[in-house]
Image (cartoon, rainbow, N blue to C red; front, side, top):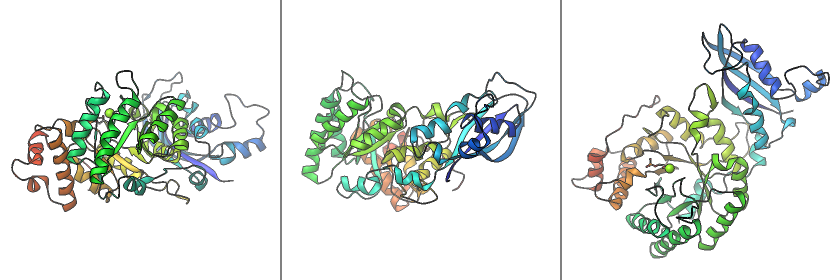
Amino acid sequence: MTRITATYDIETPSGLAHAAAVLAGEQSTGTFVRLASETDELRDRSGARVENITQTATAKTPSLPSRKTGDTYERGLVTVSWPMGNFGTSLPTLMSTLAGNLFELAELSAIRLVDVDLPEQFAHDHPGPQFGVEGTRAFMGGHKGPLIGTIIKPSIGFTPDETADLVKTLVTAGIDFIKDDELQANGPDCPFEDRLNAVMRVINDHAERTGKRVLYAVNITDEIDQMWRNLDAMDRVGATCAMVCVNSVGLTGLRAVRSRSKALIHGHRAGWGLFSRSPDIGVDFGVMQKLWRLAGVDHLHVNGLANKFTESDDVVARAARSVQQPISKHGGPAHTAMPVYSSGQTIWQVDPARQLLGNDDFIYCAGGGIMSHPSGVADGVNSLRAAAEAARLDIPLEEFATPNSPLRKAIETFKKPNITLSDF
Ligand SMILES: O=C(O)[C@H](O)COP(=O)(O)O
Ligand SMILES: [Mg+2]
């Protein structure tokens, strides 16, 4: 029987071998005592198996509080496998198994899920992105190069008409992609449908006049039945991109959107720090992004280089590359998605963001980096377009920027960040 394999970084006062066995037991056939009904045959059939243990460190103090303590804490990488018969390819049960009770086990003073190796069957049984990069470009009328985008800022506070006014400035200036902020969904001060209709009038009008269909990722995040109504409303006005906050709606909510959507799904990962920030507990992005892609995101946020958050540039680079890799190394549909760089992005990070991927199949979103341009939002868009062009031509920004141009003003406004990527 095919098995699913996951690797954890654990720390324990009980010895790595014992802790790994407790973990495997709790997450499959076992409990805190051996039951007579847990026969050897049942264990052989359904038990999780410890495949490998590699000790990496020891410490005198625990990384996380626990009711079980000891004199020495061993740290190491533990690989565990499960038979597919336990949960098939169900994503919710995969989560309960790989990322369930084990985070609370008293034998573990640190536990982080760092990798999962999914059998090919997962790639066959789940829809994956409906459109991906090619579909995204097709929705726009055959766009080439990276998508230069922005986030409506202020994130919250605009009425539908004020949002549409800003969108008008953005599309006229030549933006490719606009998204709602995750805080803006369907509040009484800016109702979803009013905002959608007002913005789509601008986008549709621009498309009719120029042939360029700007993507508007409208934030549909809500209860499942409301998200479905939101999709219907999008359909009525020809909207082509639905933003979903994947942590807020969960895998099942995302999958429910995928089952009804005729539009692109733009996955925002707001809340990700809760799962990822501590090295001692949580889940690596490389694991979660596979599940979000299987459930159907076409675009997925990966943070940005020199971002306003805490992740290092190496972590961001790994995340960006991961969504362009096949779901399963054993085969099946690759289900690749478009990485979305966003968080504190300005003219400075476009070039390295492109270089680290080695392709143009990404979305680059700058909210403050466009909206705060000293000579206005339109020049903010122009400066970023120029930065993307400089990146394409492989010319440093300082050299490419003509005097008094929007790019030159952006160079003078935004401090050049220090980007530290270990592989180039
Ligand atoms: O939702 C997002 O991606 C963020 O709000 C990014 O905004 P910023 O570009 O102003 O950091
Ligand atoms: Mg935001």
